[in-house]
Length: 466
Ligand SMILES: Nc1ncnc2c1ncn2[C@@H]1O[C@H](COP(=O)(O)OP(=O)(O)OP(=O)(O)O)[C@@H](O)[C@H]1O
Ligand SMILES: [Mg+2]
Image (tube, rainbow, N blue to C red):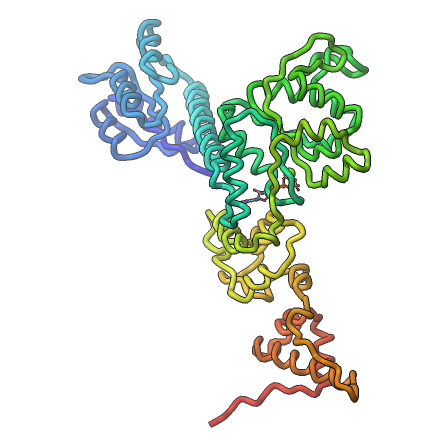
């Protein structure tokens, strides 16, 4: 836990020591100053979270310290106390920017309550700044990584549509970045300051989805004890992201169509029409053409949604982005950590390039996150990769040369055995005869490999001695 630093300013030593005692007892770091001048010097030289000062002191008074802190934006909270309390000075102190005002004589708890409150306030402020910063960096356009032609085309499109109100349909396999693109559109549009409201249509039970989207009036159904706003209303002025749109029931598809056509809706159980000033971005990983053909998705709704389709290519169709994404996620998951991974070895990267990535970017991200916890060397080698990925790249056919069956035929068993031997020797040599690692390269478990080594009568070449 961070320790917070408090500067106590008082011209009387007894007061300073008394305050130091109770405040440091409460776990704060305490520093003392015997005059406003000394306090100001300290404030410029060190970082304090709270300055607690007496009001009346010879030469310069406590209000000057508060003024100084506010003027120089030291981010430090000023609290003032005085034995000669008067409403006017209290008001003045607050006007200047003091956080609170305590009158003497005070009990130790009183002063601590005020300091705790000040620290809470400070933390909240910090969190807010961080949150804003996070929002900016996360959804700035360049948080979508990619330099492949297909992704560059996606970026162009996102840029073009962002500043229109056109409905966008984002299409792509699971984990290709559909939600990321939806957010990028919103945060790069003139609606950026207003809410971005995601709704996962596939995750909310059909009976609830309608009131989730449009809200309900009090008494609309059993359990509707009070009026509740739906996501469309919450997104007013901003954008709504309808994820997994293909999962919407036929009944709701009709209602959504109406919103798209008339830009208004009613709460469940309500009669009043509510205007929807909301930009609609929908997404699905299903092929909506098929859904329409098979009668599961309304054709008219499809056309309304499909004004501007954005197709996100699967990761295996833009392999040139894999090294870049891997680097991006390595940086993302190794911050604040001294260990973690730095890169993939060339061989390991080759495996990643050959893998099919059914879970697309999300799967790659999960892999890097997992390795940055589990892998205990900075460069990830092939045998650090999980079996699933290794197995997924075992396209034997791509490495075996085409062998023409001779006219006279061959002895299949001995040919296969020769082939096996040659591959096993290569694997053993490459892993310095560490059988675990060789087994991993061959996607075998260790015992199977050991059996094969025995059967083939393979031996580690003797060290050459001079
Ligand atoms: N081009 C990219 N650059 C950086 N991160 C990406 C990129 N594409 C996807 N991601 C990351 O991968 C994860 C999955 O992305 P997202 O949730 O947008 O996918 P999705 O297409 O909505 O998936 P699903 O269909 O499963 O909902 C997220 O953590 C996202 O930040
Ligand atoms: Mg998604």
